[in-house]
Amino acid sequence: MTRRKSQFFLQNAESQNVIEVGKPIYKTIRGRWRTDYFRNENPIVLELACGKGEYTVGLAQAFPDKNFIGVDIKGDRIARGSKAAQELGLTNVAFLRTDINFLHEFFAEQEVNEIWITFPDPQPRSRQEKHRLTHPRFLTMYKDLLVAGGTLHLKTDSPELFAYSLEQVQVMGCTDLQSTTDLYNSQLNTIHIGIKTTYEQIFFNKGFTINYLQCKMGVI
Image (tube, one colour):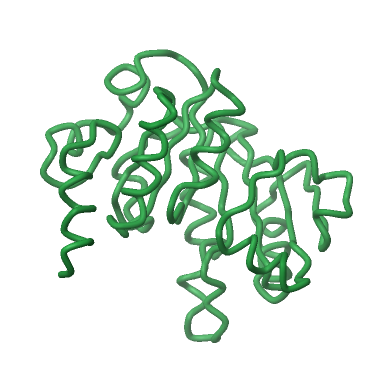
């Protein structure tokens, strides 16, 4: 491990806004995010595969009346988001370091109000399909965790992943589906309030269009 990565992991260990293995709250937080961490009854919004947490932090700034949790397995990435949130004095932000496959171990049924998936790995090969974050096994999990009528958002530069995802959310029976293959020239552009991840900015600068969808999920 490099010295820089070691510093990131030490930072996570010392940061109250990072929940990870080794901290007591890691094993007890399921179903208790509002009471034990945020200490309010505000809506909970997840950013999955949050990377450096640009969306988590950006949304938290824009919506102080909501609680935001960035989820990623990479500790050196979420350390950056954790530090940014602390420097901004944001108390409505947390970062959970875990594999998304185990999301149900950290959130109770209907504990979450919204889920954002921002520029996930498209997993383009057929044999990788089960790892796509919009595969039916993941969508089923999201549906359990979201409140009735909770919202799922997806942003991606991959036309293939977007087409696949559109098909899957419809098969899952999601409602109020809205989508575009060119977000920045769409009326839906206002939804993301101008936040760009590092990768999104790179894609945008290269002239790629951004695909976006949102729909309602959750057990009705």
